[in-house]
Every structure is written in structure tokens, then in C-alpha cells.
Image (cartoon, rainbow over all chains, first blue to last red; front, side, top):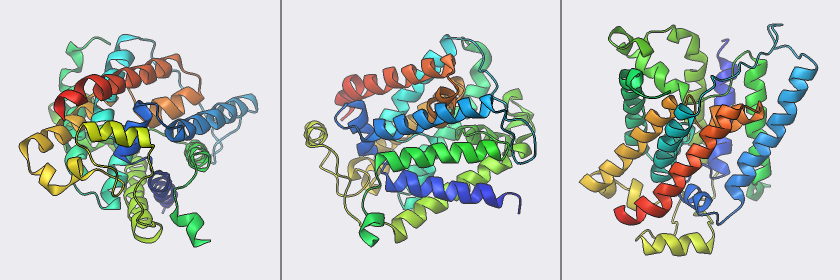
Amino acid sequence: MKFIKFLLLGIVFGIVMAKSEAISWFRIQEMFRFQAFHMYGIIGTAVTLGVIGVALIKKFNIRDFHGNPILFLPKDKSVARYLIGGTIFGLGWALSGACPGPMVVNIGYGFLSMVVVFFFAIVGTYLYGVFMKKLPH
Amino acid sequence: MREIITQTWAWWFSGAMIASIMFFLLYFGQSFGFSSNLRTICAAAGLGKKTKFFDFNWKAQIWNIVFLIGSIIGGYIASQFLSSGQPVEISAATINDLSKMGIAAPASLQPQELFGWDAVFSLKGFLILAFGGLMVGFGSRYAGGCTSGHAISGLSNLQLPSLIAVIGFFIGGLAMTYLIMPLIF
């Protein structure tokens, strides 16, 4: 039962991503070609509200529902891993038109060929785990 | 009323809902990051026996797998009950650019040329989907996050690493869109 809230949040996430067409390959192409505001509006609104909310959580030391402080762990300092990893991610994002979340929303939507993309995303993550020691971080 | 639901939802509503989901996850003691699920799936499949990166307490991540299952259900609900069946209304400029690569104007949410079964069962079409997924999975773990973990959660916390990652997302995305895709299609 303790997982039902996460199931509900996931359902809302899936509906919102599908209904705002953020799961569409066409929308991602439109974004990378700078030909519409739609995707920038979605990400920009989320980040703007996110920055305000995170600042408020920190300022007022807001706690989670367990009563624990909400902690924001700083990410490891590096340039190489974020820039190289991010670039590889971007190549895949533009080609398949989906990042990991939208991949599975697409599967639920009925685009079952996205199973291929999602399966190979798992394979890609596995390959990273195998070769990570040899990569610059 | 029904039309408000079945038409394309506004960017501001979508953005506000995504931020809300992030805050709910924080309130429930977790954080918003979807690509972690890919690592969890590898660990749950037993790959941690040979590869240390997948040897961790993945059961603590089950909440995120439940979120993933929810998002599949959400996609199903959207298509079955909340959709008008209208194609994506992308800009005329994008339709024009894509037509030069042989991709027809939208007839649904996704192009048949990439996601139709004819494409999936052709060698080229299969390789496009496979390499696309491979790069997303490899790149997101290498960068330590995807759009949700870096672009939404990380930027909301003003993390410089996340900004660098998002710049990387765009370097890769623009290179694919303008340099590589014209060669592929």
C-alpha cells in the first residue's frame, strides 16, 4: 500500500507527458530545430517553479511526511562526465525522440515499437556499468 | 468540457504538473529521476553478480519502478480515454524540414517512418531505434541523470553539473538533428 502514492504520481506523469505531447518524436524535433516554444515552455515552467519551490524548502527547512529534513545532495564536481555523457544522451534523445520517461509512456500509449528503444536503453545502461572504469569522469 | 481534456494540454499546465510531481516525490522522501530505473532493472536482473555498478540495494528503488509502471498506465489512459485522435500540431517549418528527410507530416503522435512495424522490422529502422535507445541509456547513466534528474531536479537546485549536462543534451541533440539525421534519412 505504501507504494500506491508512487503509482498515482506515475499515472499523472504519464497522462501529462502524453497529453502535452512531450512524448512525441515530432515535438522533440520541433524543439531541437527551435521552431516552437511548446517544449521550452514545459521545461521552462517546471524549472522556474522548481527553483522557487526548492529555495522555499531550503529557507523554511520544510520536512517530508516522515518528518525528515528534505536534503538536496550536491552532485559530484566534474565537467567531462556531464558534458560527454550529456552529449551521448542528446544524440539518442534526438534520434529516438524520447528520453527514458517518455519511452515507457509511449509503450502504454500503444506505440509498442518503443519497447525496442527501451530495451536498448537498458542495454546502454548495462554497457556503461561494464565500461565505466575506463571512461573519463 | 470534453474538448478541454482531449485537446493538446498547454505547456504551462504540463510544466506546473511536472514541478508538482517533483515536489510530491520530495515530500514522500524521494527524488525525481527516471533513468535510475534502467540501472535498477539491470540490478534486479541479477547483473550485479558480475558488474559491481549493479550490485546495490535495488529494492530501495522499487518506489521508482512503481512510478514507471504508473507512467505506462498513464500513457494508456491518455490514449484510450483522453485523446481526440488528432495528429500533433507541430509548426509548418518543422513539417517542411522533416519532409525533406522523407518524413511525412504527423498523422498521430509518432512518425510511421520510425515507429511503424515496417520500419521496426527493417534493418535500418531497427538499428535507428536500437542505437537511439542505446545512447540514451548509456549517456544518461554516464551523465548521472536524464531530463528529469538533471534538467528538472538538478536545475531546480541550481546545480552546475546539471547545467553542464543539459548543455551536453543540446550539443548531442543539435548534432544529431542537423548533422547526422540528414545522412541517415
